[in-house]
Image (cartoon, rainbow, N blue to C red; front, side):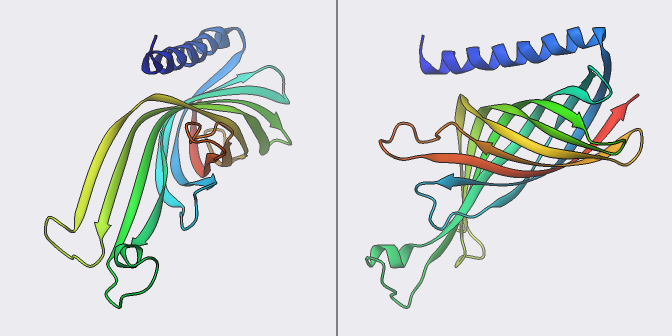
Length: 222
């Protein structure tokens, strides 16, 4: 079985686990909801000099499966756009790092689009605040790279765009956040995610991980 088939098999297993939790949530007090919001993401670790965070978004659905007044299990199924951006001076690179006085600036935006499945424990601190913590799995749907020539305002050379399949490449890590309930239906949820799977495992002695700050607006159907 090739790598793509293995990645798809992992994705099917995780989604099947989510479906299992949906089905068995009926035995507990379960709340369904929708969520969406902003991502502020980048990569951390080796080979990240000059790499910056980028804004994007996420959206999907979630469950709250209550096991007690203090503890809930919250599985989610989300589309999440992550990635990073960086700028380069092509003239400086071609000149060995020195300035030529004729800088040619390019801004590269790398968009990593994932199907993510957070499986979070939710611990109530009081009637309004709850702590969220647990693993998150992600499957790369595609990678979109956009290169903008800052010296070109118009024309074919001003913008370049390419897209390649992600082949459901697996990412996994840890998410921690806070749920702030505004009323019975709405809440705000800031969250931090850090990957623990090396994105560059094909390169020896190099480690590189996804990282993202998220702010979600949640709506619960009661």
